Length: 127
Image 1 (cartoon, rainbow, N blue to C red):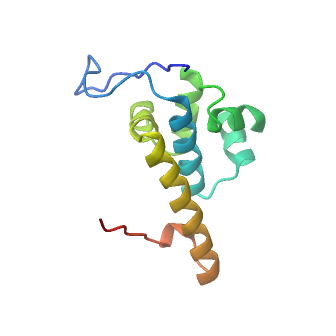
Image 2: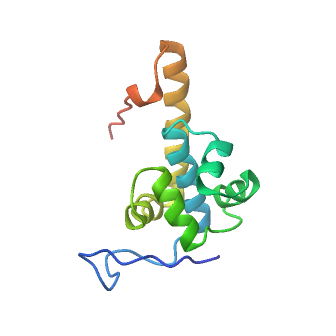
């Protein structure tokens, strides 16, 4: 497993609140879910980050992890800082990340059927 360094948050300078290393498979699935939630294509995000679609595909597939500079660029593409991005991508377990991908896909299908944006679709799961 490749590990990524997790930047400290202002309220957690020693990184005690977040586990490290981050599982690249979970990170990749969460990155894909984030991209799809923002209705962004692989090529569009790759262009914003300044990498090839193949590199982004490798990150999403858990084959490689983005460098710190690329994480900053990804964060900027989604309008957040690097710590927020790592929180967003690093928090879910692999199962949660897969669920996020399924939910994002369902939101797109529902939105297409309703003639609206997936950002307008809300899915609630009750346990």
